[in-house]
Length: 140
Image (tube, rainbow, N blue to C red):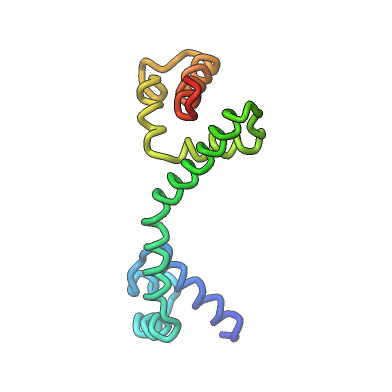
């Protein structure tokens, strides 16, 4: 095996361990190496630290999305209070973040989206979500 092949195999093994949560034995079976070899790579390249950092970043993601959402929402409120129009980019960002927060799922359920009582057309859905967004930024 060439050095390049070894490097690619090690990177694959690391990806499987750090990001996909596979066991050392599963990785060894996948790449055709001994479990001991994979364990040596894990220790040599400190995959455990990377895995811990990755898992920490995932666990903080919902909080970060909500904080970003609140920041954008407050910026839009301020802009509206100054009798200005929020930029299309700001509104788009607000909508993207709004879709990512858990409360958005509750709004969808309240609107009947994804249920048997689902509104029949996009205009109904847009109207419901627009009302929710308007309330969220303090217009209603």
